Image (cartoon, helix red, strand yellow):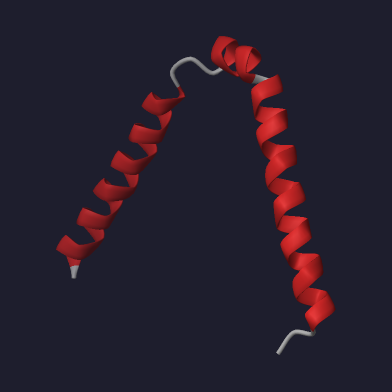
Length: 61
């Protein structure tokens, strides 16, 4: 399906991308803690809204 060179490139890209993401996250960790304190509340609210809409949809059918 993929050639050997494409697999090598994909592997190196994934490794480089993961390293860049970890480095970037560690660099911005203090800023993330300062500005995004209670984001878990928003995530919980979104899941609750989706659950409520799902329950309403299934109860109407």
